[in-house]
Image (cartoon, rainbow, N blue to C red; front, side, top):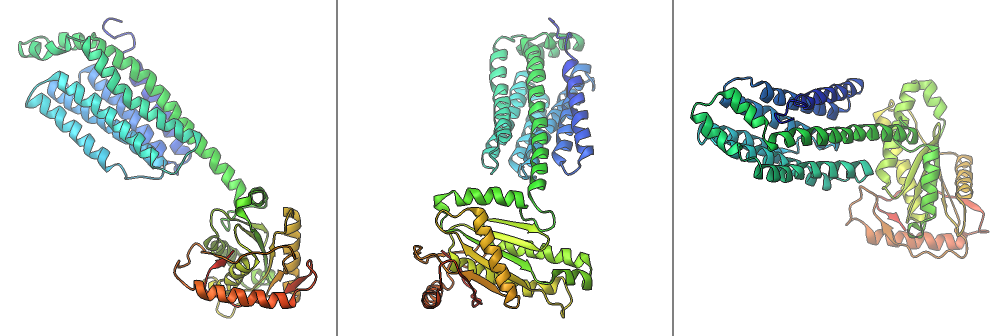
Length: 456
Protein backbone atom coordinates (compact mmCIF):
# COMPACT_ATOMS: atom_id res chain seq x y z
CA UNK A 1 0.00 0.00 0.00
CA UNK A 2 3.06 2.24 0.17
CA UNK A 3 2.55 3.56 -3.35
CA UNK A 4 -1.22 3.49 -3.23
CA UNK A 5 -1.61 0.87 -5.97
CA UNK A 6 -3.67 -1.57 -3.88
CA UNK A 7 -6.80 0.55 -4.25
CA UNK A 8 -5.74 3.29 -6.64
CA UNK A 9 -8.46 2.33 -9.16
CA UNK A 10 -11.13 1.54 -6.56
CA UNK A 11 -12.41 5.14 -6.40
CA UNK A 12 -12.94 5.59 -10.15
CA UNK A 13 -14.53 2.14 -10.55
CA UNK A 14 -16.97 2.66 -7.67
CA UNK A 15 -17.83 6.13 -8.97
CA UNK A 16 -18.59 4.78 -12.44
CA UNK A 17 -20.88 2.13 -10.96
CA UNK A 18 -22.69 4.77 -8.92
CA UNK A 19 -23.00 6.95 -12.02
CA UNK A 20 -24.62 4.05 -13.89
CA UNK A 21 -27.12 3.55 -11.06
CA UNK A 22 -28.12 7.23 -11.11
CA UNK A 23 -28.35 7.16 -14.90
CA UNK A 24 -30.72 4.18 -14.75
CA UNK A 25 -32.82 6.01 -12.17
CA UNK A 26 -33.08 9.01 -14.49
CA UNK A 27 -33.89 6.86 -17.53
CA UNK A 28 -36.67 5.21 -15.53
CA UNK A 29 -38.17 8.54 -14.47
CA UNK A 30 -36.91 11.52 -16.42
CA UNK A 31 -38.90 13.88 -14.26
CA UNK A 32 -36.20 13.36 -11.62
CA UNK A 33 -33.59 15.50 -13.30
CA UNK A 34 -31.41 15.36 -10.19
CA UNK A 35 -30.59 11.76 -11.15
CA UNK A 36 -28.92 12.97 -14.35
CA UNK A 37 -26.96 15.57 -12.40
CA UNK A 38 -25.75 12.97 -9.92
CA UNK A 39 -24.80 10.56 -12.71
CA UNK A 40 -22.81 13.30 -14.44
CA UNK A 41 -21.08 14.27 -11.21
CA UNK A 42 -19.87 10.78 -10.30
CA UNK A 43 -18.85 10.08 -13.89
CA UNK A 44 -16.84 13.32 -13.96
CA UNK A 45 -15.13 12.43 -10.69
CA UNK A 46 -14.12 9.03 -12.08
CA UNK A 47 -12.75 10.68 -15.22
CA UNK A 48 -10.76 13.27 -13.23
CA UNK A 49 -9.28 10.57 -11.01
CA UNK A 50 -8.25 8.52 -14.05
CA UNK A 51 -6.61 11.60 -15.58
CA UNK A 52 -4.42 11.89 -12.52
CA UNK A 53 -3.76 8.18 -12.17
CA UNK A 54 -2.86 7.55 -15.83
CA UNK A 55 -0.98 10.80 -16.26
CA UNK A 56 -2.82 11.74 -19.43
CA UNK A 57 -2.31 14.42 -20.70
CA UNK A 58 1.33 13.60 -20.05
CA UNK A 59 2.53 17.16 -19.57
CA UNK A 60 2.25 18.20 -15.91
CA UNK A 61 0.60 21.56 -16.63
CA UNK A 62 -2.23 20.37 -18.88
CA UNK A 63 -2.76 17.37 -16.59
CA UNK A 64 -3.13 19.59 -13.52
CA UNK A 65 -5.46 22.06 -15.23
CA UNK A 66 -7.63 19.50 -17.05
CA UNK A 67 -8.06 17.33 -13.96
CA UNK A 68 -8.92 20.44 -11.92
CA UNK A 69 -11.57 21.42 -14.48
CA UNK A 70 -13.16 17.98 -14.41
CA UNK A 71 -13.00 17.68 -10.60
CA UNK A 72 -14.58 21.12 -10.25
CA UNK A 73 -17.29 20.23 -12.76
CA UNK A 74 -18.05 17.11 -10.71
CA UNK A 75 -18.45 19.08 -7.47
CA UNK A 76 -20.50 21.85 -9.10
CA UNK A 77 -22.81 19.35 -10.82
CA UNK A 78 -23.32 17.40 -7.60
CA UNK A 79 -24.32 20.41 -5.51
CA UNK A 80 -26.48 21.79 -8.33
CA UNK A 81 -28.20 18.41 -8.56
CA UNK A 82 -29.15 18.60 -4.89
CA UNK A 83 -30.57 22.09 -5.42
CA UNK A 84 -32.52 20.76 -8.43
CA UNK A 85 -33.99 18.08 -6.17
CA UNK A 86 -35.16 20.83 -3.83
CA UNK A 87 -36.70 22.69 -6.76
CA UNK A 88 -34.07 25.42 -6.76
CA UNK A 89 -32.37 24.87 -10.11
CA UNK A 90 -30.06 27.66 -11.17
CA UNK A 91 -29.71 29.04 -7.64
CA UNK A 92 -26.00 28.25 -7.44
CA UNK A 93 -24.50 31.41 -8.99
CA UNK A 94 -22.17 31.81 -6.03
CA UNK A 95 -21.06 28.20 -6.47
CA UNK A 96 -20.39 28.82 -10.16
CA UNK A 97 -18.20 31.81 -9.32
CA UNK A 98 -16.32 29.72 -6.77
CA UNK A 99 -15.80 26.94 -9.33
CA UNK A 100 -14.37 29.37 -11.87
CA UNK A 101 -12.09 30.86 -9.21
CA UNK A 102 -10.73 27.42 -8.29
CA UNK A 103 -9.82 26.58 -11.89
CA UNK A 104 -8.28 30.03 -12.41
CA UNK A 105 -6.11 29.69 -9.29
CA UNK A 106 -4.93 26.20 -10.29
CA UNK A 107 -3.91 27.64 -13.67
CA UNK A 108 -2.12 30.54 -11.97
CA UNK A 109 -0.24 28.37 -9.48
CA UNK A 110 1.14 26.23 -12.27
CA UNK A 111 1.94 28.60 -15.12
CA UNK A 112 2.65 31.84 -13.27
CA UNK A 113 3.75 30.84 -9.77
CA UNK A 114 4.33 27.08 -9.77
CA UNK A 115 3.31 25.79 -6.36
CA UNK A 116 1.93 22.26 -5.92
CA UNK A 117 1.04 22.84 -2.26
CA UNK A 118 -0.95 25.95 -3.14
CA UNK A 119 -2.87 24.03 -5.80
CA UNK A 120 -3.68 21.31 -3.26
CA UNK A 121 -5.01 23.83 -0.78
CA UNK A 122 -6.96 25.73 -3.44
CA UNK A 123 -8.75 22.64 -4.70
CA UNK A 124 -9.45 20.89 -1.40
CA UNK A 125 -10.46 23.94 0.59
CA UNK A 126 -12.38 25.29 -2.40
CA UNK A 127 -14.39 22.09 -2.83
CA UNK A 128 -14.99 21.89 0.90
CA UNK A 129 -16.35 25.43 0.87
CA UNK A 130 -18.66 24.62 -2.04
CA UNK A 131 -20.19 21.71 -0.14
CA UNK A 132 -20.62 23.80 3.00
CA UNK A 133 -22.28 26.59 1.00
CA UNK A 134 -24.65 24.03 -0.54
CA UNK A 135 -25.49 22.76 2.96
CA UNK A 136 -26.23 26.30 4.11
CA UNK A 137 -28.54 26.78 1.11
CA UNK A 138 -30.44 23.65 2.18
CA UNK A 139 -31.16 25.21 5.57
CA UNK A 140 -33.04 28.06 3.88
CA UNK A 141 -35.29 25.65 1.97
CA UNK A 142 -38.77 24.76 3.24
CA UNK A 143 -38.39 21.00 3.36
CA UNK A 144 -37.76 19.57 6.80
CA UNK A 145 -38.20 15.83 6.35
CA UNK A 146 -35.74 13.37 7.90
CA UNK A 147 -34.17 12.63 4.50
CA UNK A 148 -33.66 16.35 3.93
CA UNK A 149 -31.91 16.70 7.27
CA UNK A 150 -29.79 13.68 6.37
CA UNK A 151 -28.71 15.34 3.12
CA UNK A 152 -27.88 18.53 4.98
CA UNK A 153 -25.61 16.73 7.43
CA UNK A 154 -24.08 14.59 4.68
CA UNK A 155 -23.10 17.64 2.65
CA UNK A 156 -21.94 19.60 5.69
CA UNK A 157 -19.73 16.79 7.01
CA UNK A 158 -18.46 15.92 3.55
CA UNK A 159 -17.46 19.55 3.04
CA UNK A 160 -15.82 19.86 6.47
CA UNK A 161 -13.84 16.68 5.91
CA UNK A 162 -11.91 18.46 3.12
CA UNK A 163 -10.62 20.99 5.64
CA UNK A 164 -9.79 18.45 8.35
CA UNK A 165 -8.21 15.84 6.08
CA UNK A 166 -6.14 18.35 4.15
CA UNK A 167 -4.89 20.11 7.26
CA UNK A 168 -3.83 16.89 8.98
CA UNK A 169 -2.26 15.07 6.05
CA UNK A 170 -0.32 18.05 4.69
CA UNK A 171 1.52 18.28 8.01
CA UNK A 172 2.98 14.79 7.51
CA UNK A 173 3.48 14.93 3.73
CA UNK A 174 6.78 16.79 3.58
CA UNK A 175 7.70 15.30 0.19
CA UNK A 176 4.97 17.38 -1.44
CA UNK A 177 6.95 20.52 -0.72
CA UNK A 178 9.92 19.13 -2.67
CA UNK A 179 8.19 17.94 -5.83
CA UNK A 180 8.20 21.31 -7.59
CA UNK A 181 11.92 21.78 -6.87
CA UNK A 182 12.68 18.23 -8.08
CA UNK A 183 10.73 18.86 -11.29
CA UNK A 184 12.70 22.04 -11.94
CA UNK A 185 15.91 20.05 -11.44
CA UNK A 186 14.91 17.63 -14.20
CA UNK A 187 13.61 14.69 -12.16
CA UNK A 188 11.83 11.90 -14.05
CA UNK A 189 8.05 12.62 -14.18
CA UNK A 190 7.33 8.93 -13.44
CA UNK A 191 9.41 9.14 -10.27
CA UNK A 192 7.64 12.30 -9.24
CA UNK A 193 4.23 10.69 -9.79
CA UNK A 194 5.27 7.68 -7.71
CA UNK A 195 6.53 9.98 -4.95
CA UNK A 196 3.23 11.91 -4.97
CA UNK A 197 1.15 8.71 -4.74
CA UNK A 198 3.26 7.51 -1.81
CA UNK A 199 2.51 10.56 0.34
CA UNK A 200 0.03 10.26 3.24
CA UNK A 201 -1.97 13.06 1.66
CA UNK A 202 -2.66 11.08 -1.52
CA UNK A 203 -3.38 7.76 0.20
CA UNK A 204 -5.72 9.25 2.80
CA UNK A 205 -7.36 11.33 0.06
CA UNK A 206 -8.24 8.26 -2.00
CA UNK A 207 -9.43 6.25 0.98
CA UNK A 208 -11.54 9.06 2.47
CA UNK A 209 -13.14 9.97 -0.86
CA UNK A 210 -13.93 6.32 -1.53
CA UNK A 211 -15.74 5.86 1.78
CA UNK A 212 -17.34 9.29 2.15
CA UNK A 213 -18.30 9.40 -1.54
CA UNK A 214 -20.01 6.04 -1.24
CA UNK A 215 -21.93 7.18 1.85
CA UNK A 216 -22.91 10.40 0.10
CA UNK A 217 -24.16 8.43 -2.90
CA UNK A 218 -26.28 6.24 -0.63
CA UNK A 219 -27.79 9.35 0.97
CA UNK A 220 -28.61 10.75 -2.49
CA UNK A 221 -30.17 7.47 -3.61
CA UNK A 222 -32.15 7.41 -0.37
CA UNK A 223 -33.44 10.92 -1.06
CA UNK A 224 -34.63 9.91 -4.54
CA UNK A 225 -36.36 6.84 -3.12
CA UNK A 226 -37.99 8.93 -0.37
CA UNK A 227 -39.23 11.43 -2.95
CA UNK A 228 -40.74 8.62 -5.03
CA UNK A 229 -42.50 7.17 -1.99
CA UNK A 230 -43.88 10.59 -1.05
CA UNK A 231 -45.23 11.08 -4.56
CA UNK A 232 -46.98 7.71 -4.43
CA UNK A 233 -48.53 8.67 -1.11
CA UNK A 234 -49.63 12.06 -2.43
CA UNK A 235 -51.19 10.46 -5.50
CA UNK A 236 -53.17 8.18 -3.21
CA UNK A 237 -54.30 11.13 -1.11
CA UNK A 238 -55.22 13.60 -3.85
CA UNK A 239 -57.68 13.62 -6.70
CA UNK A 240 -55.76 13.85 -9.96
CA UNK A 241 -58.54 15.72 -11.75
CA UNK A 242 -59.18 18.52 -9.24
CA UNK A 243 -56.01 18.62 -7.14
CA UNK A 244 -58.12 18.30 -3.98
CA UNK A 245 -57.83 15.60 -1.37
CA UNK A 246 -59.54 12.24 -1.54
CA UNK A 247 -62.23 11.16 0.92
CA UNK A 248 -59.68 9.29 3.03
CA UNK A 249 -57.30 12.24 3.12
CA UNK A 250 -60.14 14.61 4.00
CA UNK A 251 -61.40 12.44 6.86
CA UNK A 252 -57.93 12.27 8.42
CA UNK A 253 -57.26 15.97 7.99
CA UNK A 254 -60.74 16.97 9.16
CA UNK A 255 -60.45 14.95 12.37
CA UNK A 256 -57.17 16.70 13.14
CA UNK A 257 -58.81 20.10 12.60
CA UNK A 258 -61.81 19.26 14.80
CA UNK A 259 -59.48 18.04 17.56
CA UNK A 260 -57.54 21.31 17.57
CA UNK A 261 -59.01 23.87 20.00
CA UNK A 262 -57.16 26.64 18.18
CA UNK A 263 -59.08 25.89 14.96
CA UNK A 264 -62.51 26.76 16.38
CA UNK A 265 -65.02 27.74 15.22
CA UNK A 266 -65.09 25.16 12.40
CA UNK A 267 -67.65 25.12 9.60
CA UNK A 268 -68.26 22.61 6.82
CA UNK A 269 -69.37 23.50 3.31
CA UNK A 270 -70.78 20.66 1.20
CA UNK A 271 -72.05 21.08 -2.34
CA UNK A 272 -73.12 19.11 -5.39
CA UNK A 273 -72.98 20.18 -9.01
CA UNK A 274 -76.58 20.45 -10.24
CA UNK A 275 -77.56 18.19 -13.15
CA UNK A 276 -73.93 17.40 -13.84
CA UNK A 277 -74.80 14.25 -15.79
CA UNK A 278 -76.63 16.48 -18.25
CA UNK A 279 -73.41 18.41 -18.87
CA UNK A 280 -71.61 15.18 -19.73
CA UNK A 281 -74.41 14.14 -22.06
CA UNK A 282 -74.71 17.50 -23.82
CA UNK A 283 -71.03 18.48 -24.12
CA UNK A 284 -69.13 15.25 -23.57
CA UNK A 285 -67.24 13.79 -20.60
CA UNK A 286 -64.10 15.76 -21.48
CA UNK A 287 -65.96 19.03 -20.90
CA UNK A 288 -67.34 17.63 -17.68
CA UNK A 289 -63.85 16.75 -16.46
CA UNK A 290 -62.58 20.21 -17.37
CA UNK A 291 -65.44 21.73 -15.38
CA UNK A 292 -64.56 19.62 -12.33
CA UNK A 293 -60.96 20.76 -12.68
CA UNK A 294 -62.15 24.37 -12.65
CA UNK A 295 -64.14 23.69 -9.49
CA UNK A 296 -61.06 22.26 -7.81
CA UNK A 297 -59.05 25.35 -8.74
CA UNK A 298 -61.74 27.67 -7.36
CA UNK A 299 -61.80 25.77 -4.06
CA UNK A 300 -58.03 25.89 -3.74
CA UNK A 301 -58.14 29.66 -4.27
CA UNK A 302 -60.63 30.06 -1.43
CA UNK A 303 -58.87 27.85 1.11
CA UNK A 304 -55.66 28.03 3.11
CA UNK A 305 -53.31 25.30 4.43
CA UNK A 306 -55.21 25.19 7.74
CA UNK A 307 -58.40 24.12 5.92
CA UNK A 308 -59.33 20.79 4.33
CA UNK A 309 -61.05 20.23 0.99
CA UNK A 310 -61.88 17.14 -1.05
CA UNK A 311 -63.79 15.75 -3.97
CA UNK A 312 -65.82 13.13 -2.17
CA UNK A 313 -67.52 11.36 -5.06
CA UNK A 314 -68.24 12.30 -8.65
CA UNK A 315 -69.51 15.88 -8.52
CA UNK A 316 -69.71 16.10 -4.70
CA UNK A 317 -67.29 18.38 -2.83
CA UNK A 318 -66.63 19.32 0.79
CA UNK A 319 -64.63 22.16 2.33
CA UNK A 320 -63.87 22.32 6.07
CA UNK A 321 -62.93 25.84 7.15
CA UNK A 322 -60.95 26.33 10.34
CA UNK A 323 -61.44 29.48 12.46
CA UNK A 324 -64.55 30.31 10.45
CA UNK A 325 -68.15 30.48 11.64
CA UNK A 326 -71.39 29.89 9.76
CA UNK A 327 -71.66 33.45 8.47
CA UNK A 328 -68.11 33.54 7.11
CA UNK A 329 -68.43 30.08 5.54
CA UNK A 330 -71.71 31.12 3.91
CA UNK A 331 -69.91 34.02 2.30
CA UNK A 332 -67.24 31.69 0.98
CA UNK A 333 -69.89 29.31 -0.38
CA UNK A 334 -71.81 32.10 -2.07
CA UNK A 335 -68.60 33.43 -3.57
CA UNK A 336 -67.85 29.97 -4.96
CA UNK A 337 -71.35 29.85 -6.43
CA UNK A 338 -70.83 33.18 -8.18
CA UNK A 339 -67.35 32.28 -9.41
CA UNK A 340 -68.62 28.97 -10.73
CA UNK A 341 -71.15 30.72 -12.93
CA UNK A 342 -68.42 32.95 -14.35
CA UNK A 343 -65.76 30.22 -14.71
CA UNK A 344 -67.99 27.99 -16.86
CA UNK A 345 -67.42 30.38 -19.78
CA UNK A 346 -63.83 29.17 -20.06
CA UNK A 347 -64.95 25.55 -20.44
CA UNK A 348 -68.46 25.39 -21.87
CA UNK A 349 -70.45 27.28 -24.56
CA UNK A 350 -72.07 30.56 -23.46
CA UNK A 351 -75.57 29.05 -23.41
CA UNK A 352 -74.54 26.27 -21.01
CA UNK A 353 -75.77 26.47 -17.43
CA UNK A 354 -73.66 25.30 -14.50
CA UNK A 355 -74.97 25.61 -10.96
CA UNK A 356 -74.36 23.98 -7.60
CA UNK A 357 -76.34 23.51 -4.41
CA UNK A 358 -74.56 24.32 -1.15
CA UNK A 359 -75.05 23.34 2.46
CA UNK A 360 -73.22 25.10 5.30
CA UNK A 361 -73.09 23.58 8.80
CA UNK A 362 -71.10 24.91 11.74
CA UNK A 363 -69.76 22.36 14.21
CA UNK A 364 -71.62 22.22 17.50
CA UNK A 365 -69.84 21.58 20.81
CA UNK A 366 -68.70 17.96 20.97
CA UNK A 367 -70.13 17.13 17.54
CA UNK A 368 -68.38 14.36 15.58
CA UNK A 369 -67.19 14.66 12.02
CA UNK A 370 -69.74 12.10 10.80
CA UNK A 371 -72.57 14.11 12.35
CA UNK A 372 -71.26 17.34 10.86
CA UNK A 373 -71.03 15.74 7.41
CA UNK A 374 -74.54 14.36 7.73
CA UNK A 375 -75.96 17.77 8.62
CA UNK A 376 -74.15 19.47 5.75
CA UNK A 377 -75.34 16.86 3.26
CA UNK A 378 -78.88 17.29 4.57
CA UNK A 379 -78.62 21.01 3.94
CA UNK A 380 -77.49 20.31 0.37
CA UNK A 381 -80.70 18.33 -0.08
CA UNK A 382 -82.66 21.30 1.29
CA UNK A 383 -80.97 23.63 -1.23
CA UNK A 384 -81.80 21.26 -4.08
CA UNK A 385 -85.40 20.98 -2.93
CA UNK A 386 -85.66 24.77 -2.98
CA UNK A 387 -84.86 24.81 -6.69
CA UNK A 388 -81.10 24.23 -6.91
CA UNK A 389 -78.42 26.91 -7.34
CA UNK A 390 -79.01 27.78 -3.71
CA UNK A 391 -77.40 27.78 -0.31
CA UNK A 392 -78.86 26.37 2.88
CA UNK A 393 -77.49 27.06 6.35
CA UNK A 394 -78.59 25.77 9.72
CA UNK A 395 -79.43 27.86 12.74
CA UNK A 396 -76.73 27.89 15.45
CA UNK A 397 -77.26 26.00 18.69
CA UNK A 398 -78.61 28.27 21.48
CA UNK A 399 -75.47 28.04 23.61
CA UNK A 400 -73.19 29.15 20.76
CA UNK A 401 -72.33 32.85 20.96
CA UNK A 402 -69.64 33.95 18.56
CA UNK A 403 -68.05 37.33 18.28
CA UNK A 404 -67.87 37.99 14.53
CA UNK A 405 -64.39 38.72 13.29
CA UNK A 406 -63.08 38.45 9.75
CA UNK A 407 -60.48 36.26 8.14
CA UNK A 408 -59.02 37.06 4.76
CA UNK A 409 -59.44 34.51 1.97
CA UNK A 410 -56.09 33.81 0.30
CA UNK A 411 -56.57 36.36 -2.48
CA UNK A 412 -58.52 39.05 -0.63
CA UNK A 413 -57.25 42.56 -0.21
CA UNK A 414 -56.39 43.14 3.44
CA UNK A 415 -57.72 46.68 3.33
CA UNK A 416 -61.03 46.09 1.59
CA UNK A 417 -64.50 46.35 3.14
CA UNK A 418 -63.95 45.43 6.81
CA UNK A 419 -66.49 47.95 8.10
CA UNK A 420 -69.06 46.97 5.49
CA UNK A 421 -68.69 43.29 6.40
CA UNK A 422 -69.19 43.96 10.09
CA UNK A 423 -72.39 45.89 9.40
CA UNK A 424 -73.74 43.18 7.12
CA UNK A 425 -72.94 40.51 9.70
CA UNK A 426 -74.83 42.44 12.39
CA UNK A 427 -77.85 42.68 10.06
CA UNK A 428 -77.64 38.97 9.23
CA UNK A 429 -77.47 38.00 12.89
CA UNK A 430 -80.45 40.22 13.74
CA UNK A 431 -82.53 38.62 10.97
CA UNK A 432 -81.52 35.13 12.06
CA UNK A 433 -82.42 35.81 15.70
CA UNK A 434 -85.87 36.87 14.58
CA UNK A 435 -86.39 33.84 12.32
CA UNK A 436 -84.67 31.00 14.20
CA UNK A 437 -86.77 27.91 14.83
CA UNK A 438 -85.77 24.86 16.90
CA UNK A 439 -81.98 24.47 17.20
CA UNK A 440 -81.72 21.45 14.95
CA UNK A 441 -84.05 22.70 12.21
CA UNK A 442 -82.19 23.78 9.08
CA UNK A 443 -83.35 26.77 7.15
CA UNK A 444 -82.60 27.34 3.50
CA UNK A 445 -81.79 30.90 2.61
CA UNK A 446 -80.03 32.71 -0.18
CA UNK A 447 -77.24 35.00 0.96
CA UNK A 448 -76.08 38.17 -0.74
CA UNK A 449 -72.87 37.93 -2.70
CA UNK A 450 -70.35 40.16 -1.01
CA UNK A 451 -66.92 40.69 -2.46
CA UNK A 452 -65.42 40.82 0.99
CA UNK A 453 -63.93 38.52 3.58
CA UNK A 454 -64.44 35.27 5.36
CA UNK A 455 -66.06 35.83 8.75
CA UNK A 456 -65.10 34.13 12.01
